[in-house]
Amino acid sequence: MHIILGVTGGVAAYKAAELVRRLQQEGFSVEVVMTRAACEFVRPLTFASLTGKKVITDLFAESAGEANLESAVEHIAVAQRADLLLVAPATADILAKFSRGISDDFLSTLYLATHAPVVVAPAMNVNMWNHPATQENMERLGSRGVTVVPPDEGYLACGMTGAGRLAGQEAIVAAVRDVLRVRRDLTGQTVLLTAGPTREPIDPVRFLSNRSSGRMGYAVAEAAAERGANVVLISGPTALATPAGVSRVDVGTAAEMLAAVEKHFPSATFAVFAAAVADYRPVEPAKSKLKKTSEGFALELEPNPDILAACARKKGHRIVVGFAAETSQVAANARKKLDEKSLDLIVANDVTAEGAGFDVDTNVVTLFSRDGRDLPLPKLTKREVAHRILDEVLRLNASLKHQSAG
Image 1 (cartoon, rainbow, N blue to C red):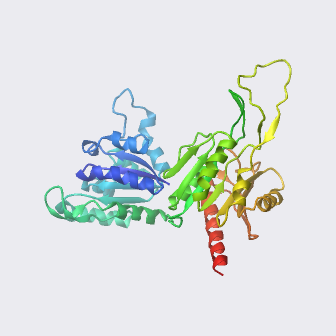
Image 2: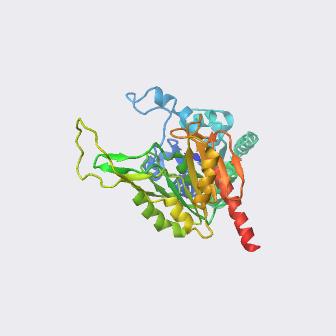
Image 3: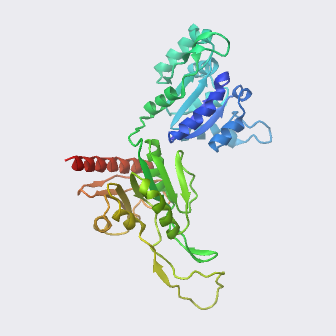
C-alpha cells in the first residue's frame, strides 16, 4: 500500500525520517510531502534518500522556467495514488488549514483533493495543543473521519512539560494499520517467491524468453510483506521496483533461479512459484553474435530443470503454490499439474481472457487446492488476487496443522 507522509515544520520533523523506515519495514511504500517550514528542520534530500522518490515541497515549481501544467496539477496525481495520507508531525497550523479547508500549499491542497483516509499525529507546545482553537479544529477533523494519534506527554523542546510531544512510532504505525485494516497474520513467516520470466541465451545478444512482466508475483510479494512476512523474492528480469520490505535476488536464467531457490527454500515457511520459467534452453549458446544469413538455422534445445517440481518433492510440511497460465482446458490442465507436481495450491488462468494474463493490472483466476476446493475469482486487481492467494495458503496451513495434531 502507498502512504503519503506529510511532514510539517516543527522540531519533531526529524522523527519523520525514522518513521519512514518503520513504515517501510511494515511493507508500505512511502512518498513524502514537506511544507516549506519543515524544510528548515530537515532537508528534503534526507527523505529522498530514504524513499528513493521525489520529495514534493511546493505547490508549483520554484522557478518560473520550471512551472508548467504538470507541476500545477501534481497534487491531483499524488492524491489519486495515495492509499492513506499520514501527517506526522502535524503542527497547529496544518491542522487549522485542514479544519477550515484552506489550501495554500501542496500538503493542504492534497488533503482536499484526496479520497484516501487521513491520519494526523499532532506535535506542538502544550499550550498550543490545549488552546480552544486547536481543540475545536481537532473535533471538526474527527467528525470528518480523520484519525488522530494523540500526542504524548512529557518534556517538550520548548522546555515545558505536558501533552504535545509526537506520539511514538508504534502508536502511529498501529493507527495506520488499523485504518487500512492491514492484517498481520503472516508475522514470523518466511515466504519464498519467484516472479518474472527467465532468459536463456542463444548468443551474447539474443535469448529465449516469454511475455511475463512479473506483476502477479510482485503483487504477492508486496501483499505478504504488508501482512508481516519476511519475504525473499527471486526475480527474473523485470522493470518493476522492489516492493517495500522485500528482499530481492535478481537472476537471469532458469539455472540461476534454481540455484537461488535451493539456497533459500530450506528457510521458507511456504513458497509461491509465480515465475514463468522457460521450458527449454539452447544446448550450446554461441560465444559470439550469430550473423544473419540468407539461410535458416536450427536451434537445438534441451529441457530446463523443473524448479517447482524439484522443491515440491522435498517440501515437508511447507505449503507450495504454483501457477498455470493456460490457453485452453484450464481446469483440467491445472488439476493435472497440481497432482503431478505434488502442489498444495495452483493459481490458474486463461491468459487469452479479457483482463487476465500479461501486461495488465488485473487478473481472472481460479484457485485449485489439494483438498478438492475450486475457488473461481471474478476479475480483480492483481493486488486483490494476491491477498486471496495468501488467504487460501493460510487456510490450507491451518488444515495441515489440524491434521497433524489429530
